[in-house]
Length: 172
Image 1 (spheres, rainbow, N blue to C red):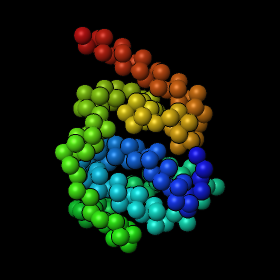
Image 2 (tube, rainbow, N blue to C red):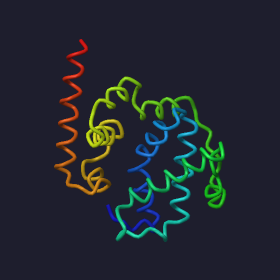
Image 3 (tube, rainbow, N blue to C red):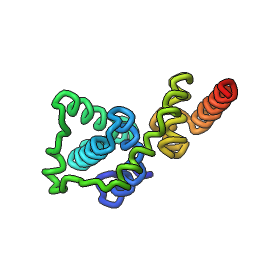
């Protein structure tokens, strides 16, 4: 994907590509679909407001976005509420989620059993499996974020899944 995020079509594609990643990121941290959706919306709004500051020479756009997400999460924890300044600046309305949207967000984060199983893996394998299997991201996207090759990501996913299969067989 082009790193020219200051073009509306490019930013829209970037949003579509990474929305699930952010929803999963925030769901795993908050456990609350509404809060995850609010933080995701504010993160993308903040990214859109500051898109001209993005410098592809400093790293991939997904890393920049995750940095914004981490800051939004930190601010929300400190304040006890989600910042909405960027959304207001852009004139974006507050989101009201229907039950089906809430269920979809909950599914994105993976069930508790999966999260528990991932704790048995080395961090690099757990991260690769979360990104590939739970967040449904491409190997190329994950590799760009981790600054490694897609074959390294495939290897981590493969090894992690093999370990999880072994653990599952032992618990039967």
